[in-house]
Structures are given as C-alpha cells and as structure tokens.
Image 1 (cartoon, rainbow, N blue to C red):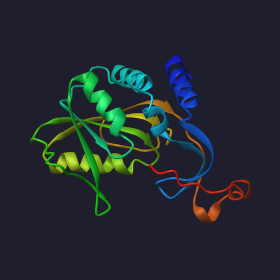
Image 2 (tube, one colour):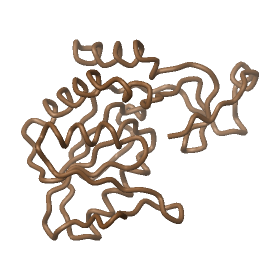
Image 3 (cartoon, rainbow, N blue to C red):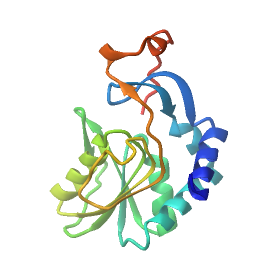
Length: 189
C-alpha cells in the first residue's frame, strides 16, 4: 500500500468501518468482510479528509454536479461537492430502481461526477450513469472510497478510488464451511 492507501485503510479501521464476520452484501453474495461506511461517515473530520484525497486523485477533472446513490454515497458525495463548490444531487430507490426525485433535474450537457462509498459489482454506479445519460447530462467520471472489486467493476468513464481491496465473496449455495458456521448479518448499504 502506498501512503494514501495506508491512511485511508487506517481511517476505516479506526472508525470501525471495515469489519469482519459473515455478511450478505447488497449484491446477495456472502463475505467475511464488510465496509460499513456509515461508521466513517459519522466522523466529519475523516469525511472531509477522504473527500480531499478523492478530489486530489481526480487530477483536475471538470464537473459541475455530483450525483451520489442513496444511501452509501450520500455523505461522501455531499462533501466532495462542497469542497469542489459543485451542485449536489442524489438518486434514491423507487420501485426498486434508482431515480432522481425531489425535483432534481439535470440540464442537457451538464457535466456530472458520480460519487459512491463502496463498489463491489458497480450496479448503483451504473444506474447513476444511466440516469445522467437519460437526462442528457454527461457523466465525466466516478469517484469512490473503496473499490471492493479490485478493478474488476468496469465503466465507460474514468474511475478513481482511494482504496482497492478485494475480499472473497461467495454465492449462498457455495459458502465455505468456516463462513457458514458464523452468524449471518445483513448490515445494509
């Protein structure tokens, strides 16, 4: 790990945002590790630092608006937007799909950065990209705190993450015995 990744990792450990047990991820896969970013997001000095680090990694990427998927991306998305002096929107579930609500709209050609906390497969990020395109906006990049896919989640816009960590995940019918013996938690996303 380089110095920035170590700093981010230390923040996650210190705030108990990286935990061990037996978890069902939003994807339905099971894992012995879980990033509960809500734990780090209650510590605003850490959120401020993480947003600073994300913005530095964007290397001057130009955007007018930040779009974050609810729930996970809400806090870090707002802080990235605040520091960048950009407009901030969030997408939320309606009929099991992410949508813009609350009167949020995007203008044709509006340059939008998607900000998320943790990406495992990238489903919510992909939904945000589709929302932007349907509205006529231009998705210019994706910024995430943790790329849990270790670069396997692919998108058609530039991506940056502060930390890449890939922990094994398992379908429910293929759990190793040591994991199956642990109590299952579904902590939420």
